[in-house]
Length: 484
Image: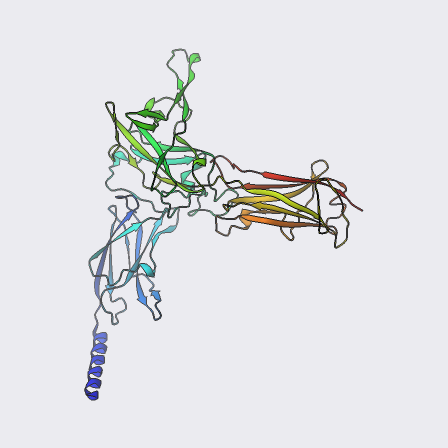
């Protein structure tokens, strides 16, 4: 019995070795279809690469390089990949185990818009199989093959274009609360994470601007917002005043501005409707040509808020929801998300000590020049939401004079987001900083006898699209310094 079993194993090994030596590679085809988050819109022109995955001992995987094949997504979102399988000519069982990577030239260089890892492996794929993929990256540039040339981009398209002076092109805002963070980030392949005005959340009253194509068949629209990722929606109800320039008088000296509200109005039993200025009075100058809403962001809790429009067309005295033949909602910026933050920073001088002893405001501090002499300022520059832009502690005296340079130990007397970001949009600062003015360093020549104001200022990155809404928030502490 043992001899028979041994001979059977030898024969099996011989068959496998023979099969491995005689295995033949043949042409293998995998078809695919890719769509963006908006149904019907596809990442036209994206380059698709397919890679083979090999299981390794211990439950890990290796991604074989180079890729098996490369293709390009066509105008319908389809692609076909053809390669030789088995790829190495060795013994392989079944079809290939593969993953896909999509790249697209969005800013002068190829950017990954879809990238699978081993956990997303398509196992044992059959030849001629068709695989459907969803490209949700905010960097993807999508198009719709069903849209005719006569309807895009400027004829029936709607998209949000600006928040205040911030172009949506520079806001990480492309619709998805999963992949977009809603910060203003001056765009640079694809977004810059450094600079004085980057990674900015939004707060206060936000002027929202949008583009309605001239052939959009709509009479009214709503702007709606959702703070729960699009599960529930509420209408923006803020008044939207405007002015148009009346040139009807034959005498140009009598031309004048006329006030007109764009909404909200009620019509046909529907509330909180707005009107488009250049649909109401075509070929007329308007003060606000493309402002679609003013959003009071304090109505929502801090965090991501999503925005969209709901458009209506008119039939007699009845309003009906507009369809894709009336208006086309852009798949990238037809809906946007913004990071909202209306929480003020905590800015406070907590304590001033002379040689380790706390001193009250307005006291005289006999500040020596020895190694052990020091004035310690304990202060707080902290933002709960992590959107601190920077802080500075200044010792001001006399006539426009201040102590420089600022101390650097044990904490810096001045710091900013750029020094702490590291690619992360969150920096809180600290609840308790201490900085020391040491007597042997800050000599009487640098810090003379005088009345002093310790002035702490801090700013958040929160913007309304025009400027910071928490700029140079300050706290002060006054003392008098007497030097030997």
